[in-house]
Image 1 (cartoon, rainbow, N blue to C red):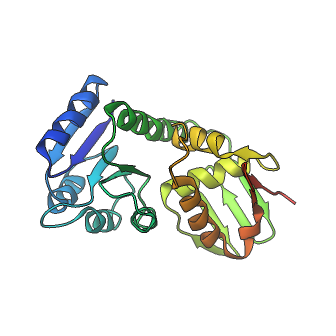
Image 2 (image 1 turned 60 degrees about the vertical axis):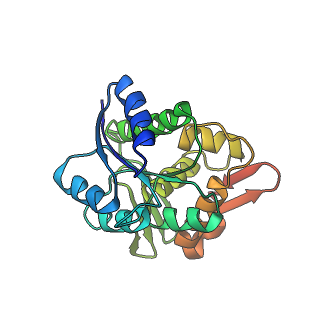
Length: 225
């Protein structure tokens, strides 16, 4: 069971998400704007936040920016717009997933479940996993990435993506496989989530960006050598 904050100014939408989340035995808290969301995150030990973008008083982008000053709680962003600019901004702020309205109740619950599974896997690792290549170090147990002696700051989902690629190094990975394993849902052919995250990840890797090879018409491969 997880404690989930639902932040949306649409009462009906909050009610639907609350209904399905509680059916899955999750505890929910409802707020209607970004200011209330920031306060709720400070006052509660949350496992997940579902955040709309367009809201009164404080929008979702501003709320996530404030929340990231004191918490790394996973965030699923909701939006009526699917423009790449909005997705890039959301992921740069540290959002874990981005869902375009309208969406099905099944879809949102699958995405919630995928993030919660990731959190569970993180706590089960007993053996330290570290990958090194010249000045690039990825400590997959401690969730740390070092670039030429400087620790890089990545959004939670970028860590997941990078570590998944590393664990499957030198293997050609299809887009569908990566989305299924990292995000927990099946790629339908019209979602740029993976491409956006790859752009952000390569930007973070800087001089080591070429460790990730694009396979035209297939997907990606992390090159060890």
